[in-house]
Image (tube, rainbow, N blue to C red):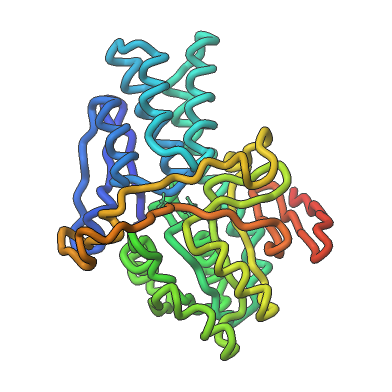
Length: 328
Ligand code: MRU
């Protein structure tokens, strides 16, 4: 049975509360768009494509309940600033409403399209993964972060199921632990061989020749291929460059912000320092020491080997030249 992060039931939205994983599988029933906004903010649901799908359903709930559309749109937009899929999906459902179209049907389409895009990226991307590869991944980009299957982790899945005999190094991903709590949970459920490492272990493993490629997802990709993703992604990209290891970014076209150029235009979310200074209510740092919690960083195109989308592969060579390989 495939993992799903959310289920639209027509009258309401069900969310698998990702804050409770891996200990407990708790489903939340959300009947009010403000509850959906809260769930995105507090990361009961997370991952750029999943946030987009869930926000679209939140919009549908708000409209069905007779709330002012611009207020519903604004509340959902203001939940998290970096993931472009959130804005893209909300614009789509708002447009459907303005044009007198089927708003609920549009939200369902967004979910179905994302699932199809993930399967397609898996097919395209698995060709880049050599047989027996030891793949390192960061954060969670699997079924939990999307409408199902996953982006970077979707490629891992597709490679695994095509008999490529791959192994995954799972970055723990401080401070929210999306790697050790969520990615490892997905991989264990499916029996995909893996091992969790602390984020700071990656470089040494690369130096020892134990990593064949790095695959990550994206929260926003600019027109000139700057990639915002989970904090720590940039450091990994630098490490792969030093060690001559391919660095792949996997994201659907709904993550591309064509109006944004360069890293300056990307708003990086800053979250509460308490998420760094305590884990599950247990304090692990002095309460009076300040902490900086940036949730994302930006990787420049020159550190990226290729970006895989559902439409094909965007190869970026050392001189920054881009080659687009369309896959039918
Ligand atoms: O803060 P999160 O957990 O929402 O961050 C998620 C990531 O950074 C993912 O890598 C990204 O959204 C791509 S998910 C397919």
